[in-house]
Length: 258
Image 1 (cartoon, helix red, strand yellow):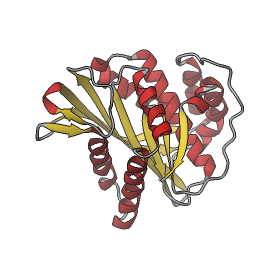
Image 2 (cartoon, rainbow, N blue to C red; image 1 turned 45 degrees about the horizontal axis):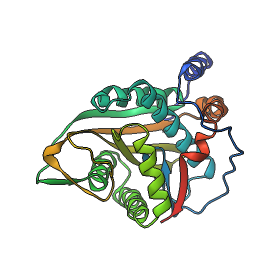
Image 3 (cartoon, one colour; image 1 turned 90 degrees about the vertical axis):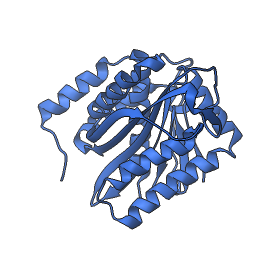
């Protein structure tokens, strides 16, 4: 199924996109140059970790990173409290749609876990696995996508500077949640799959990844999302998003080997 929009619908998306507010840059935007990279890379994007399957063009990867970051920053600005996780999630979905990534699946609900401890890095991967398993991608493709994201999260533990960037991105907005996702292109259509975990803490923990959290001291929620890229909208919104992101497109995104 191909997703396209008429000119009036595209114009409406552009107008809504231009109305959103994000936190201002702390410094002027520098030139952002994206070299052609091999597929075995993960990327920290704001409070998310994105990894891409082989064969996805650098332009698709950049569009996904920028839309995700912009939507996150808009949601952070409007709903900065940990208790506003549901509102945050649906604002994120709204902005993604107006950026040219139509939500074909969206779900947000309470999340219960067994045991006395929980690992956020494991939890978000489990949520993403649920998203991927619900799409008719074929077992081999599904396994590949999950393996790529798992590798990206695992590799991040050994990348001290990149991990520090990720934790800093989280701390700027109260440590209210994180996401892990990936993109794939099938028959010329690009899809982004995201697993999101939002949480309300009863402690002052600031380390999110690779740490055991007491499950009795945190209230958990999950978001499951699938977005389809609409080229006719993205072509109109790409420069707007890059301009609005400014230096955030450099300071909050970092790629690394996996």
